[in-house]
Each structure stands twice: as C-alpha cells, then as structure tokens.
Image (cartoon, rainbow, N blue to C red; front, side, top):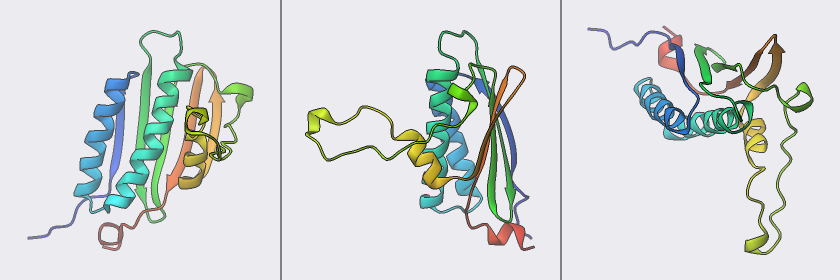
Length: 153
C-alpha cells in the first residue's frame, strides 16, 4: 500500500475577519504537517500568511463590510506558491511597502507597536509581487520548503 500523498493544491475563500484568519491558519498548519513540512517551515508559512491576511483585515477592508479573502496555494519543486486576493482598498502608492527593520534600541515603553510585518514578509517570502487588477488586489509569493517525497515520485 502506497503512503504517497498527492501534490498540494488548495483554494480557500473565507470571510475577512480576525476569527476566519485564525481558523484558516490553524487548518492550514495541520494540512502542511500532514504533508511532512517541518515545524520551522510551517511556522514561516504561518507567520507570512498571518501578516498578509491581517493586513488585509486591518487595511484593505478598513471601513468595508463583508470582505472576502481568496487564498490559493500550490506545491512546486521550488516550494509553496501563494496567491492572496481581495477586493479591498489598494495598497498605498500601488506598491508593496518597503518593510524596513524597526529600530529597537530604545526604552521598552518607546518600542514601536507595529511596522514589523512587511519586514518579516520580505525576509521569509521570495518572488513577492503585488498588482491591482480592476478592483482586485493580488499578492503572489513563494516560500521555500523541502517537499522531496511528494514531488520526487
């Protein structure tokens, strides 16, 4: 009896809310574990997707009701490829924020509250691209993970 898994190909559409993002990440983490990804790889995927999807909740759909997030994940030899889409507000200036490293050499109560997200996304994701198509935002990227037993067969 073969223990080989089929190639991962997911398409998830869910409401734009903190709770839906959390549930999606939990569900996805289990699926990735089932495919043999290490905890470190799963953590990288979770971190990038949490930052991306939370930005959609907080910024793209700010003052918008009933937003939807569309997430596609495909497995390729070079890792996991992601496409995250929404119909919220476009990114400022129509481009991905730089995501500079936050300065942490200050007193604890003076630490910045945010600003780490795009730095982390840019650090962990490859081939990061954003485009606005009509009323739709589309962010694509790749995260390198080892998937030898699934793709070598």
